[in-house]
Length: 94
Image 1 (tube, rainbow, N blue to C red):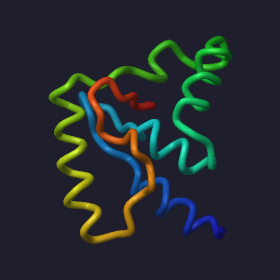
Image 2 (cartoon, rainbow, N blue to C red; image 1 turned 90 degrees about the vertical axis):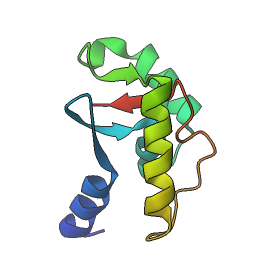
Image 3 (cartoon, helix red, strand yellow; image 1 turned 30 degrees about the horizontal axis):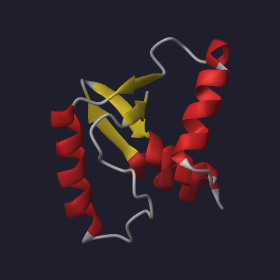
Image 4 (tube, rainbow, N blue to C red; image 1 turned 45 degrees about the vertical axis):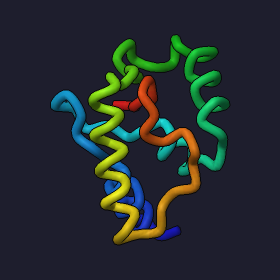
């Protein structure tokens, strides 16, 4: 993957939530080719390697907004295959 393609892929995953640029755990897991559960477990296991504000839980309202925006986005691009995306209590990485 070229540097330009990688940048486009990652910047396409970026969203603004609570005034911060974040990547959803489901998108980050897809990028690394792992399940969301595995990604979350590794972040918790290696918490000392991440800043305290690296990950936060979405509120139900935020999750619903993400779910709606993903549905609109999916009509334009191939959707990510992740059954956990957009659920309340999902996680986002700063």
